[in-house]
Length: 337
Ligand code: KG4
Ligand code: ZN
Image (cartoon, rainbow, N blue to C red; front, top):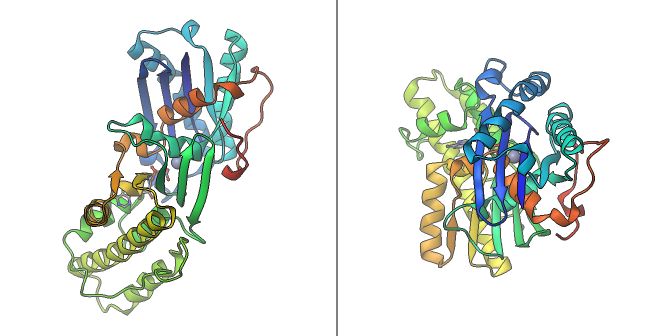
């Protein structure tokens, strides 16, 4: 079965073709990061308009890459939610439009289910069950993933997402948007020991996170500096990153201990952070579990994870036609596959 996957929930347009026998045949992503950078964050209306411009050319390119045509499709999967309402409408409209035109069914995919299953597209892939740390600009969650549709939320952020904390901190240090990668680069040149920042909820006894206080602590620290020279900024970045990495690492270990599972999967843009990877690798070696990092193009928002998740839910495919999106959608409400 050949499934087209369409993702447009935030600031990436993703399109992919997944074949249930041959695997991922093609995938293309267009990121709007440069467009939103000027405004210091995602501008929903601009995001929607750009998805509209990109989605059909990307679809044609994917079909060409795979040497397939629209007539070869068996189903069309799209991100139904959660996300920005206007942005979601693009993939939903294209999926249902194509579905009606081709007489093929559509599958509305939960964006987070896409993220949770995306590691299975990587090589080597983990096998069920595993613990997933989902750390992106919009989400910070630890989940036990025991199968398709079998997700147990172990913990999540009570306020900012991890990527959001990186971005907001980078912004207040004047590092642009999205500032996570820039902050992390600067941190590599800094001395993490010069300033000490809080480790929020490190000893909370649960698997929840809170990052808003850490950001405020950085703000207070910045205000206290007589001069914010490059060396001081690098040291603050290093201290911030060390705090984030310590908390994320400790909660991952907590999740491994609590579930007794032996595999950890890290998904989402913050998973690109080198310090975080180094810390998790060291912990995995010491504590004898395995850690998987899907390639970055599958960690950030993409169409491949939507095509894949859709392919796992072919049973739930429905006739294309009038549609709605779900800007808010609780993962816990998903049926089993
Ligand atoms: O998964 P992603 O592309 O999803 C969202 O659209 O949210 O994640 C983007 C987030 C941004 O907040 C970005 O600053 C952060 O991931 N990020 C990083 C790094 N690379 C990306 N944060 C810390 N260190 C990095 N190297
Ligand atoms: Zn996402």
